[in-house]
Structure formats: structure tokens, C-alpha cells
Length: 367
Ligand SMILES: *Cc1c(COP(=O)(O)O)cnc(C)c1O
Image (cartoon, rainbow, N blue to C red; front, top):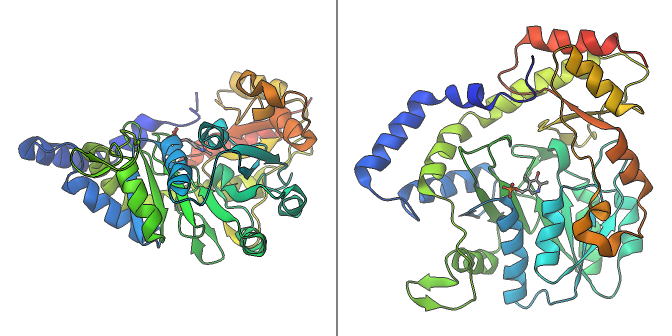
């Protein structure tokens, strides 16, 4: 069986470095808000061409804390509207609703799966204060256009960069484009920890300062609480593992890109729609998402031929029980995407023999 993602194999590549940093932490005996966290934050800020990086517990918290910090700064208030793509992973929307803000879902572009920028302005009302732009599947949306619209209407731009470590829009890197960006280091992400992890990057000193306090009980100084904060810190051990993997991120993204290019050039089957990389973008292929009208049939067929696939995602947010208030809304493009998408195996440890097999099996597929 070709696994969708062989995480064990990915992480075993770094076994000896992981053991070194683990030994170092065991010898030091410092586990939270220590030097390993500071080191990772410094290196990841630099990687993202950002002034600040603040490590937090996970990607959802990263997005939640950005929005919460904007509330503490008086930029956002309860009931304000945030535009977000209707086909995103649920976390983007949870971060908005958890802050008593209102998610305004906007359909994606069917070719790139990122927000359809032509639909943003018609969704702006007197209550709109921000766009949560999601770099879904590994490529950024059209940030040139999003930033132009945001300037015109005085909106904040926040990037959900959970799936796009290393991606670029023109020469700008994901995490360094928006006013603030939320990152996830969930094990399966392009830069994945050996457990949960997340971070916020921004050039805004005030925002960074509030987030620093929010992640640590709303406190800059022990036992002095300025905000009703959270416990949402990136563990030093995860930060140390991430520092090891960050050095290899461009390399491992390059391996993904070579596989993606083979899929794009060699999968030739009229039943399959391949993903599109926008001209201005460098895609990092967090997932390689194809579409077909009889998706479950294709998934069964691939499974029978030894190829494991995953659906990102089977149910659109507005059809989730958790958001029953949206159940009467319709988003035809999103619904089509959720009915048709299937993600093929792609990872830096996949062999070219495995890639050959996937291409061969898909090219022989018929309904
Ligand atoms: C993974 C992910 C998140 C959440 O990250 P966690 O670390 O799992 O909390 C948010 N948004 C998107 C698009 C994601 O893929």
C-alpha cells in the first residue's frame, strides 16, 4: 500500500538530530518559554521575512489569538464581520466565531481553490473589518488583489498559513504578506512537529506584544495579568524539533514540487481535473488535490490498487452541524468541490517508483 503520508518515515530522517536536542533539553531541564523556543521563533520569523514570531500551542490558537489581540487593541469588536473562504478547513471559521465575530463565507475559485477575489467587494458591509485569507492546499490566494481591496476599505488582512509553509506570492513568502499570519505545526503539515504546535508572524509591534501576553495567561510579568489570557505556548521540545526540520523545509518542499510536476505532466485522463497553480504563486503542495465527478468510485479503485487517498474535505463548513445557523445558505462551488475532491499521496519521502504507480493506475481509470 502506498500510504497517503508516511509521517514515521519523514521524521526518522531527522532521528539523530532529534536525539541530540532531546538530550540537550534533558540535561538543561527547562521545558517551557525557554531558549529553544526563542531560537525557533527567531529563525522562523526570519524564514517568514517577518519582524516577530510568537510560538503558540496549535494553529487554531494562532488564528484565535490574532483576532483576540485585535479586539484587545480596539481594532475589532463583537459582531464585526470577517470575510473567509467557504471551502476552508473548519479551524479558520472557528477562530472567527469563537471571538464573537461573524464569518462571512465567500466562494473559492474552482481552478485554484483559493478565495475568489472577484467576490470579496460585494460581500463587504459597514461591519466588515477583515479578510481571513486561507492559503489552502499549499498556495496563497491572490494577495495582490486582497491587499488592494483591504487598503481601499480599511480592512485587516490575516493569513491562515497552516498549509503553506514556504509558499510564495510573487517574491513574498507566506507568513510575511498579511498584517498577521497564523501557522500550524500539526505533524502532517509541511513543517510538522512531533505533536501540536503553532505560531503567529507579524510586523506589527503592538499586535505581537499583546499576543505574547495572551499566550501566557495575559501576562508579561509573572502574576500580573493585563488580559484574560490563555495557556497557549509552543513547548520547547517541539520548538527544538521544529528548528531541526526548518533547515530542511525548502528541500522537502522541493521534493513535493517534483512529485507534483510529474502528476501535472503525466496524469492524462479526461475524467480527472488537475489542480492549478496561479501564475504569481509558488505552490508548496501540502496536498495534491484532484477532482472527479464519481469521487468515491475513484477512491475505491485507487484503494484496490494499493493507493491510499484522503478527502480534504468531505463536508463544507456551512453544512456542518456545528454551524446549523448557516444550514440554509448555499455555496454551489464549495459544494461541488467537497463532492469531487480527492488528495493523492505526496510527500518528501515518496519514491519515484511509487509516483510511477500512482500515475499509471490513474491513467488506467475509467468509470
Ligand atoms: C491544520 C489547519 C489549521 C489548524 O491547525 P491546528 O494546529 O490543527 O490547530 C487551521 N487552518 C487550516 C487551513 C489548517 O489546515
